[in-house]
Length: 463
Image (spheres, rainbow, N blue to C red):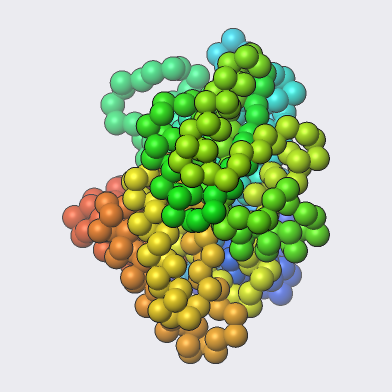
């Protein structure tokens, strides 16, 4: 179906891209054969470190004409193999396209290239008294990757997800043509919204080369509460009541004691409290201390009424650093605690979180395997990790398949979905088919066929 890259192809690519930015075969570092989780591995034949929309356009035009598969990669922080070159071919890395191009204070937008890191954008906007609300845990991810997966994060409960903050995109289509979608306009009813199709498409429809993002005025005050519970059941069942109280929380995170201990060991730093089995981390922001303190007092009292053993204000710099550094390190800490792991990134209705997490505890006991978890309780997005520990290769694969089948099946019974924010990539496509059904997936295939009739852009992903 695809043509294998030959010396003539490499020579042409080096004629349109500076040769030192075109790497072949053994010149390509091993890291480019997998993403952060590492469970899916396949190396590209050629790695091109692109610098501009025009370079990407030229590469795509040639690839399309010669039926060479192409995958685009940012920081490689994905967890489902979406940026892995499973068909070989060309990989284009966009991390050097990392400029913040414009801050438009009149239209409350910032225009960026796809290689800008989330933490760089957050710092830049805050320094100018603005907030870019999407806040995924992986701060070293690129904005292009965030848009491609419709990343969510901790502030989604109040502010929404990446999709809600994309106003315009410049993309390169598989045939090399350059298109501008959306813009600085606030609303638009001009035909089908093609921009929204690109968001969350995991690099299968077009390559993002520029993004116009919506900003908000930066809240002047942000405070957090660390709320311990003497049982996991009390902790997670408090969440629907907190949401029902209409308290304007920015984040509602949950985690268990085991996960905190992993983070302590990984970071070499103590967490403020590790005595309780389960915790909620709640955040309130606003423009006056009076309003924030009123909300904090209200939610602290509510949590105590719902069975919390205490409610600690995360107010000192030392406490803020220890709490938020630990929360940001949960994934890496769990990964460091085992020989190998895989993740279930389901999303369920918020009043079904307790049901699903209790089900994972049941699976852990039945299969005698560790399944730690944490997640965004405010929007029902759960991060469940199956740990290999000392299992043999054959037993690990067998157990992993059985547990994933059971977890995703249970998520379906709770009206959940396969992924809340990490995407489908290569690893989860069979579960997406089971969840959505053949009709919906066939519609997606039809959309893919219109954008990419030769199926050269990130082939083999999603379906």
